[in-house]
Structures are given as C-alpha cells and as structure tokens.
Picture (cartoon, one colour):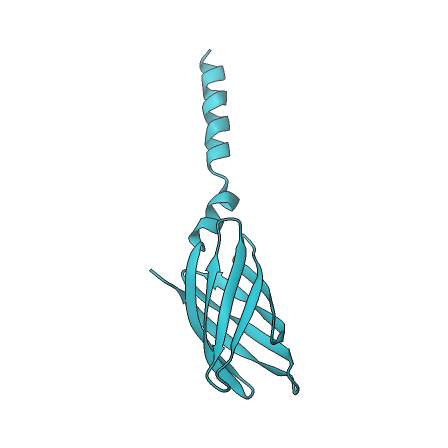
Length: 123
C-alpha cells in the first residue's frame, strides 16, 4: 500500500513540475521598448497573450508612421514576428528576466532598413 501511495505522489509531483507550462507565463503581458538602426528609430509596444500570440505596434520617430507586427513567442522566450502594412519585414529576438533584445528588418519601403531593439516588461 505504501508503494502505491509513493508511486501516486511521485507521479503527481512529476506532472506538477512541468517547466514548459510555467515558462510562458513569465512573458504574458505588455512589453515596451525602443528600436534604432539604419535611417530609422522609434518606440514600440507589444502584448504576449497566454497562448503565445504576439501583437504589437512600432512608431517611427523618423517619419511619424506606425507599423504593425504579429507572430508568436516560444516557451524558450524566442520571439518571431512579421511586420505588416505599410512595411514588410521581421521583428525577432529573445525575452528573458523581464527584458528583451533583438533585431528588426524592413524590406519596404526601399531602401531596406534594419537595426536592433531593447524592451522591458511593463509592471
């Protein structure tokens, strides 16, 4: 009988310690930051939903335009999104410890632009 109880407790303990399920919750919420690069700089905000979906907006200080991006955040903290209208490009990086860094690339408008970004999770 003791073996069955010990086996059941061990099973429940191992199920409850699944770190993959816990990790995504560290990233859920709103993130804000700045970006800079070739002929472009500005700020951005994005939201990570509990299913890992990411939606965000970049605002260019250079030409006073807004750009939108959508994508996914992996449980490892890897961020992969695509820039949409009026741009075509990527916004990707890594989130960890309530901070994030990465790079961005725009193929449109010509000439192509690229750079880096940094972010922090809002409280």
